[in-house]
Image (cartoon, rainbow, N blue to C red):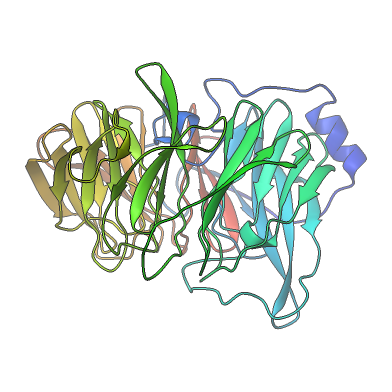
Length: 421
């Protein structure tokens, strides 16, 4: 196992290593939160199944700062964000590119300088750099919530544009952006006046901004939208406090909404399968809702196919494989449901630790990662079939990136490549 220190490199060095021509994500890449399509599935082959702190680890690279953003992978380059402490309370926000073959940092750029004034109060399970970057056509888009959003040249980290969309956060930021045509879209669900916004991905200028207009006691949430298509019409599915809402991504107009009472601090990214939207309703007690996606207007009383209320995650996102939905609650109890009916198939214990990371499906197996570094690998099916438990030995709340022959795991202070060198 090789260990690399977080040394900054000049832009010219990174430019030579990465190349000067634009490049586009391929099927083997992991270009956004939860990978291609945003639902945690990978077509990668020969994905590692067993590892430990000193077994099947190709490299470990120390990453400066603190962050829970997940790494993304394009070709042989990883991109991630971090917050570097500046004194006791302040910080600067950075983006990094890492060589996926050896773990060396290719560039480390300060995207947003030292924050002035009192920083937003941060939850212990959040960070100033929690949203995951997203890649398209040689550009990396990095989002730091209320602190700012930027588009970077993937080759050298040069800032192409940067904007500051202000809102009043609670516990920091969290939801990652999505790309739809020429738009970069993300939610801004803060203490008050929550909204969802679309920026021109080429300039950063606001194209549309839509208020949530949901009556709820607590407005703050941290979700990532999901783009789907229903009967030839595209919908942007975006959970918020009190309701999940479907928008027309081209103009931000609401198509339908389904309420779930006072649910708030919603984190999990929604799923779409079988004509149903699956959403976890957040705190204080989460329930899982399956909603028919072809409605118009308020569909709360007409389009809920089923609900499930036991051991539903408030933080981790569920995953669907074939006709089964798998999820882990925040304390490591796993559940398998019939995705069409909500019928319980099985439940069982993964570990007794805290869970925040979203599971992935790769190589025919599902990977669940707890906050203390243990990954439980299961074979999907009608019973809990644990294939392996692997302990990396370090705390971390980020979700995995995956490619042929490798997994990438981010911890408090490091990035690991699991798999043969």
